[in-house]
Length: 82
Image (cartoon, rainbow, N blue to C red; front, side):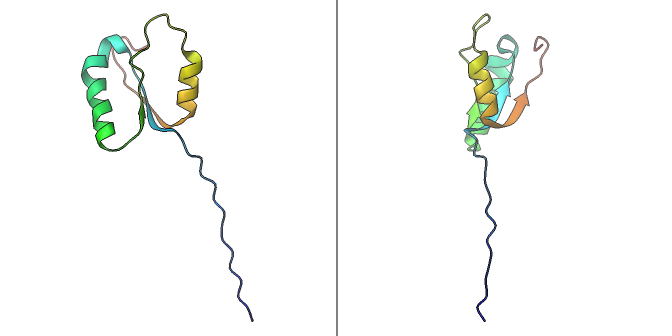
């Protein structure tokens, strides 16, 4: 008698980024956030961080896409975050 084996087919939702870092640039860009970003990169985590965004820029479409392409959304809260 022939044995049959079934294999489970698993679909994996591969993301472009492991971590999306959300921060308020004026508060933490040159300090905590840059150190965090460097540490994540050293740990081989693909990290989205946009140092180019300035006040008033129309970047919502780019940010929404990056968030959807990320596995984890990490918020760096600071005094002026919101």
